[in-house]
Image (cartoon, rainbow, N blue to C red):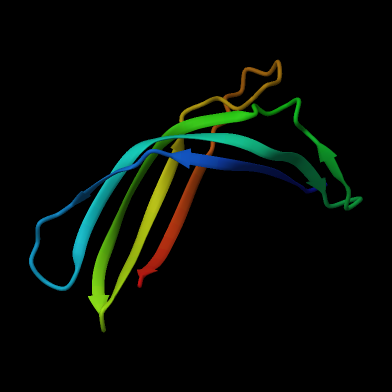
Length: 116
């Protein structure tokens, strides 16, 4: 039997951004800071019956950790553009069972933005 565990969080990051002083069209940025996440969904989906089961009692309703990333800003035809990536390293043990297993989250994001 195969199963997927879906744990969805609404995350609130507090990220500090540093612009690197380089000349040219691309402006590199580094950023880091803490985040806290609040679970909105904690379920298990089994492939054998296709059903889902609520697992709220097995996983913590909050997560926290450290966000680290980099991006590049540029402008073209009067518009600003940015592309970047970020990794969120979960530091909380989200396992709420009697097991001694430590479970943590990890998320990689790619961002693309523009300014008018």
